[in-house]
Image (spheres, helix red, strand yellow):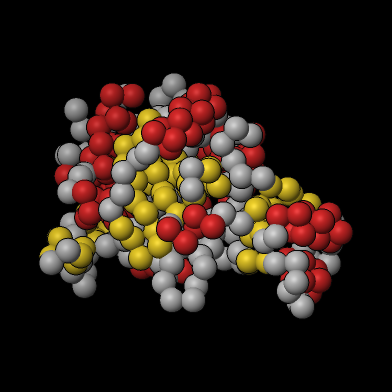
Length: 322
């Protein structure tokens, strides 16, 4: 049976077909014979109590693996004319707009609440997206997260960093390593760093004990309906301490360890309960550091290194759910 699948994405012109997981998922849907439609968060509406969208039919020219890297044609997609239609006419809708989770993003999730879940699968569930701040959500799994505080109080932050010797500061709403800082108690800029990060004590930040194992990499594990389906290790380069691909980190083949299987099992039931079906968790040294639910990436890198087709696995899962 041919399915109609809609993807809420950032503008196609801004996506990298050789890296972006959204493109990998759309290619997989096309390869499996399904219709692919795209829209943007700004093109969503509620009309007569239903979620509608300005939708365009998408035709993709799939990337090719050439000498160990994905290569795309200069013209890799073609769009049809826009039509305005209820999203419940789709079999599934993928919410794949990149963070930050800003006011427009939140409003888009409110609109998605007006999709009839009996007719259309939404990946990920909009209520789950609102509940799962990608930094904070991990903290409920106390058995598998490193020591962490969330606060805007400079003195509390100083006490924590002094007790740990070093810590990582993370803004709660950023992505791709943006705004993440390494901090030691002896840093002469300590107060200024905290003031800038907390907007003069008005905004809480995450402060997490520094894990020396970060030098060995930051592992991204992809979970589908609570089950791990693939992983890739991200390693920083040069003097950069952040392992994120967007911050210049390189990727390497890896395996999911027994401890990481325990972490996946620890989070699975909660993810399923919240309708967070397609998720990327980050693990350093056997500790869970983040749970990425908005537009987790990594499929292209895993497929390239492991000769897998994770996108097709995701779409086949959608077929079974329908």
